[in-house]
Amino acid sequence: AQKITQTQPGMFVQEKEAVTLDCTYDTSDPSYGLFWYKQPSSGEMIFLIYQGSYDQQNATEGRYSLNFQKARKSANLVISASQLGDSAMYFCAMRGPGGTSYGKLTFGQGTILTVHP
Amino acid sequence: NAGVTQTPKFRVLKTGQSMTLLCAQDMNHEYMYWYRQDPGMGLRLIHYSVGEGTTAKGEVPDGYNVSRLKKQNFLLGLESAAPSQTSVYFCASSRTAAYEQYFGPGTRLTVT
Image (tube, rainbow over all chains, first blue to last red):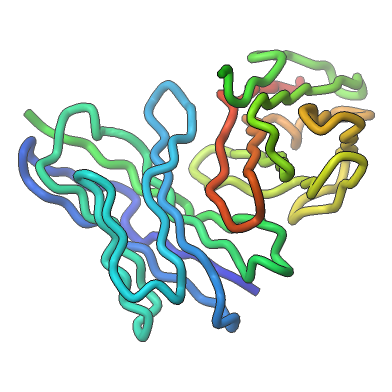
């Protein structure tokens, strides 16, 4: 069975600073995908970044990067130059092998990020 | 493109009542999913569909039924609502199993 753990219920960061949100996962499948989603107070789920288990390089999307450490089974989200609009709940999620998981996502419990001016 | 839309946005039901939540996507995606989000928790998969006419159970399927008669629509039904089904319901779709999922805005359901 797959499991995602986000150990930080809440994080605070000063505007313009970088912040790392932790995510560890557990799976016995060699093929899997890791996703980060943002949920602002308005409630929608916004896709941020994706990392495949066979990807050699860490994924980056603008100010978001994923620090993927396969041996440690961690997939931390790094947000650089935090902005007030980054204040939201952040979810880490995992998908199993594409052929058999049918894209089903297992989510962590989320981390609430608050950006202070 | 509207993306993924959900109807209704809010609903209050009494215990034992039934209702159907509608999810529609205009991206021609094959895969569609229904999740529920309870306070302080991540999303949990209820049911999913890998194409028109197909459905399958997810992690928490009890008390729900689904149908995918048209590729663009995925319906979630509650036959006899219970207070434990009070939650926010999200629909999502993806092009294939390997791609990211796009989510609808959610439906907040309260069962009294």
